[in-house]
Length: 136
Picture 1 (cartoon, rainbow, N blue to C red):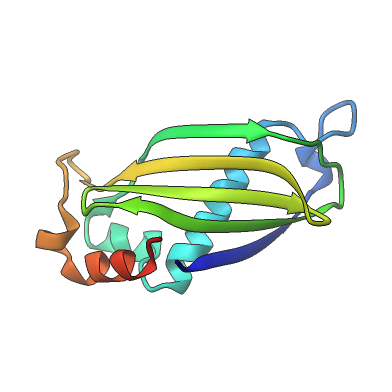
Picture 2 (cartoon, rainbow, N blue to C red; picture 1 turned 60 degrees about the horizontal axis):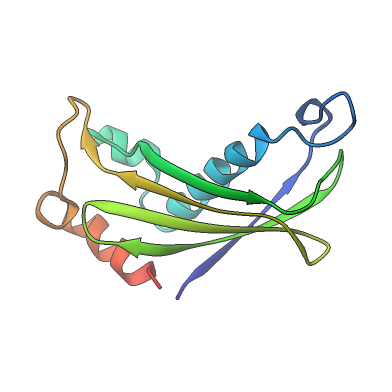
């Protein structure tokens, strides 16, 4: 199984009045790390969109374990949990100083810009091959 590592430094604007990272930012970091993962493996969002493919989030499941604060460096590890040609599920483990602060999964489908389901194996076999080679 291929695991991708990504780092994010908590910015001041990502914290709330108590100085703790606002919960919504973890979802943003998931997208940031996932975008980097896909781009570095040859299937970035910009390239997909040029071909007329979008990949919306269809579900997110997450658990907040510990708080983070301004200037913390968060280590984000992600991997493909499942991929079947139509649906992609990505797992995330975020850590601060080797302690897990957040775990999550996001599921995505592939659509045309008009909203029709795209089966990558049939329409874009090069993407299907890449995603299959990365899944666990």
